[in-house]
View 1 (spheres, rainbow, N blue to C red):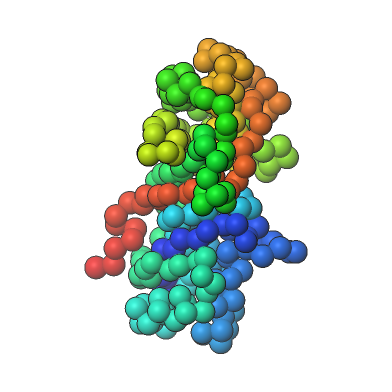
View 2 (view 1 turned 180 degrees about the horizontal axis):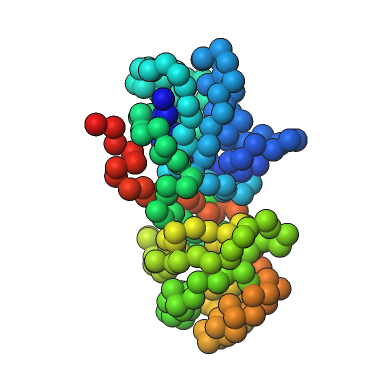
Length: 249
């Protein structure tokens, strides 16, 4: 039987989602807890990878087990065993071939920027003292939706077969004192969102023009794009699936 886990985590203390040989990951914490509960090795497959320090407001993973389980009890026990910065929101049975990663239709991220010093957001947002031209940043964000090859924003030495992504949404808006960048796509490359945000910030600061984004994307050259912004202000916020994949009749 296959089960999906819906969870969230604050990424400061983790070297990303995926297991690492010499660093603590979110996946490791969950697999360790499941192993203790079931007294055997349980491997989980996540919906995607997040970089070290990145947070997730919603992410899914799946695991297989032969026996039928009480999902409410398992959720309670997992939350009791996991660290305070990881929370399980739901566990539910899915179709046997449902896949947390490959069945995902889209993924959404947010990046948070503040322009005044705030000690309560020091681990949650990126402080930029200078004023940003949000209108120009939104003009540039619209350009992103007209392209599919985003090699220029991809981490170097990556093993992907294609750099194509379909961006459905990309926009900046103020939420109180926080400037939020929201982006949704069918898939993302490693470091892609942080490199995009860095490039749009340079436009917002007047260092480069809106039109220059066309040449940056067409170059397929990471060195032409902006510097990657800090991971602490990036949030994976939503993953969508076909309803049939996560519903058991």
